[in-house]
Image 1: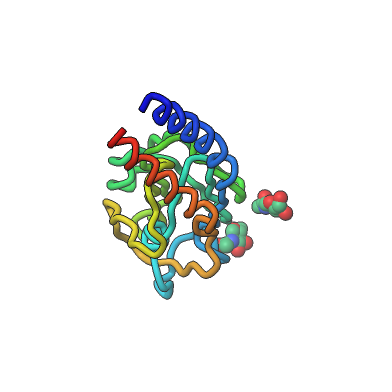
Image 2: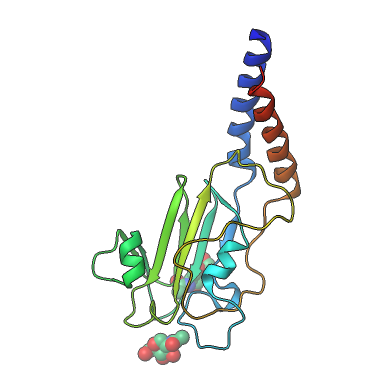
Length: 179
Ligand SMILES: *[C@@H]1O[C@H](CO)[C@@H](O)[C@H](O)[C@H]1NC(C)=O
Ligand SMILES: *[C@@H]1O[C@H](CO)[C@@H](O)[C@H](O)[C@H]1NC(C)=O
């Protein structure tokens, strides 16, 4: 049993090390249209798009925008569309934000009225060893609201390799409960 446990420990450490480098994806927010105030003819809003993707530590969001900004805010500021005290503020039109921890990340536009019109996004960064069953539904996210944004060609889903890897990791965890 001790041997089995240390094998598992080794396997998990080894795999986690590699998974964080192998699986990093860049997701383009809003697809080709980028980060902007919704005009009302979009097929889905930013949060709907987000629920269809899985985000992990090391993945990043790419925001492309004009005459606009990207604010990283807390949950309350997100709810209130409060642009006055962001945790981080990006301007310049090209912003890449990389996830460094498991958490919820809240993004809103810094332009007056844009957040209320739906230019806001919640991202849940998941733990790496969460088992992914291909095709299963992502969990719903809080604060889902606002306008909508089309998102053709938005980033990549987890690669097949990564999915298989996580499934293997999942089984390792279930085995470990019986060791
Ligand atoms: C941004 O602002 C400039 C100057 O006011 C304007 O010419 C341009 O059309 C604006 N771009 C967008 C996408 O609204
Ligand atoms: C964004 O980055 C791309 C590639 O680095 C560059 O070509 C483009 O001019 C940049 N746009 C802005 C608004 O800075």
